[in-house]
Image (cartoon, helix red, strand yellow):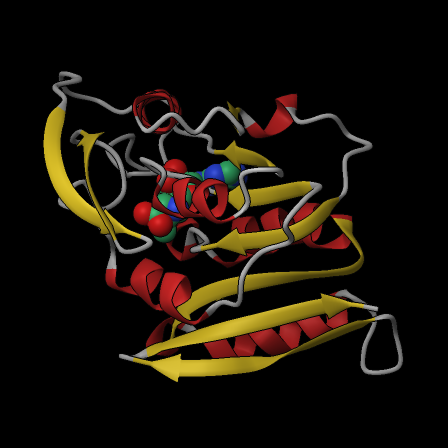
Length: 205
Ligand SMILES: C[S@@+](CC[C@H](N)C(=O)[O-])C[C@H]1O[C@@H](n2cnc3c(N)ncnc32)[C@H](O)[C@@H]1O
């Protein structure tokens, strides 16, 4: 796989910051983005669907953004739940740098940006929001979700946005099986469809 993908650990090319005006949670803000990461021009359409339709995250506890990019999801989690700790993980180090800078510039001191392997292994999450990296390939995506989704707290929920024509429905079927089928403590369904994206909900009882 080329090292020029947005999910490379170390993107090629100069790390030149771009200042971009976006609206997060109804608030106009300027953020830093750069080439070599996902959606450097602003908030991705799928991410916007998640941010519009997912219900408020848990007010306290631990919240997770899987694959934070420059941070739109993690930043909104932190704005909506200032008392919670938001864990923002990404394999791409440039994304981590930008997400941390953006959180600091917005005064969101409850965001912790890390490489996935640095998250304490006993940590469980009250809310998970993610626009997952579909383009890493099916097996890598399955490995990623198999690593994080079982770490939902009882009573917690994950919200994943996936493009309909990039396999959202078959991914939902796989998630249901991976988490133990219909009789288990996890329930997964399609919560919303908007602008060609599915918003998948995975709830743990
Ligand atoms: C579709 S992008 C979403 C980025 C950002 N959350 C947004 O909404 O703009 C997916 C992100 O997942 C990251 N990623 C890829 N593989 C990963 C992995 N194994 N663990 C964590 N993040 C990963 C990519 O680098 C990318 O930033």
